[in-house]
Length: 95
Length: 302
Image 1 (cartoon, rainbow over the protein chains, first blue to last red):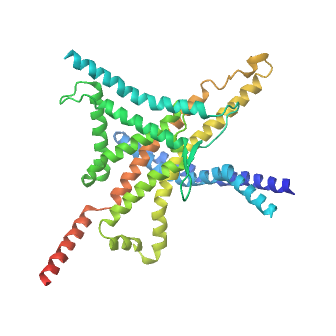
Image 2: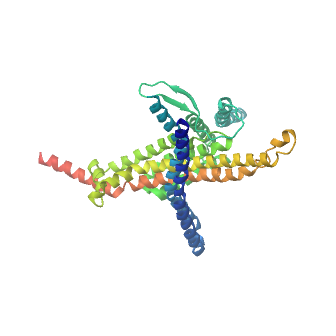
Image 3: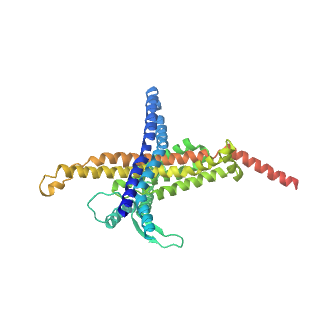
């Protein structure tokens, strides 16, 4: 029984981390759009390259935030959650 | 004259030593405290010791030590660059120092306006600290920016600054700004206010941390690949790290050099935008004028 519980905990943490990273799709598409538009803008007005690049990088960084939230959740699920959950399990079994 | 030249050089060497020694000390500490292991593994910051405090133990971790070391290093770098300043620039280092100051002033002027011109030392310090902290991973040290606590501290500082400048037009004005544009949006406004420092901290930390994780994963995958391919060779040749030569360096250029510097720039940029966006000098002047009028009216009433 204990082995089964441990297996479920570890497996579900890994699955959850993988599922959380599906959020990487959003920033990928968004940043791709931003860079495409920036390329178009530079093609139209090559003299404004530096300003467009700076603004694009800022926008990309902000668009990335949602992906990074997912990343933080995934990292917590992989490195932190299993230990805590196993602790909780051990405490409840010990009672 | 010659005597003076001599002491100048000695001081120069001392300043250079002060710049390099903290980083060397960091490497020595890392070598001494890291337990031997043959595999490549992902670890957080190592805890050196804990200080017993009444409410909660204070942990002295690798990231704290490294960030203090990098601060000392930057301090000596600044002292070195500004050593022997002349009215007319003669040395290369004075030109470099002037270039840095000029660029920072320019950046702050352009993004924050002339009211906040005094912010350029703060922004410069933040840029330097963030960039050099991330670049520490080039030396094999644990970069402090891949620890959430360090970056969250910076973000908290920025949040305090933002709140201070929002409250400058009076606390009532600050509270009222939450009910705009419509009053039922207040909870959302509060959430977005709190989300500012969190997203800033997560952005910086997540980028540096994910770079470290991806490089580690790729390095261990390359290790496995070279072990797999060279298994049939006799003796020590079987453990020859064929694919680990050079290939991880390509990733390192992106994750350590480019991403580290870019995140420093973005953190500083967001700091500037948030602070200057939270305060408008015109409104502040109007507030001051209104206050002055009420004070004079009260005096006249008496």
